[in-house]
Image (tube, rainbow, N blue to C red; front, side):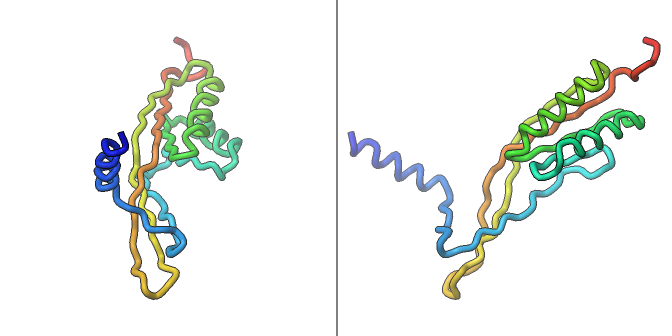
Length: 143
């Protein structure tokens, strides 16, 4: 049985690019590219205060924006989902949510700690979510 698994492990290691050992390199993560820019586009992070993000979204929706787009990456996906659900509750059925998920390629720079090694970079994939919140009816309007 051990002989059967050995070729499979060798094939798997050939498919994946090898990452350099971190003891020889300092890992510097680049900021991911932002797909869209605008007043109604909000990038959700784990570091920003949740209440501030919620207030910003509420202000945009109450001031007449037809839709807002929330982008979350990696560990901020849960916060992005929570924010969208809170907005749906606050606007009591006058908003709808459209959700898209995907992956984003993130680039990390590897800076050598010794002079013998060269600078390098590596690509990793990170999960992403894009939530579009749009108004279906205005509060207080005759339906």
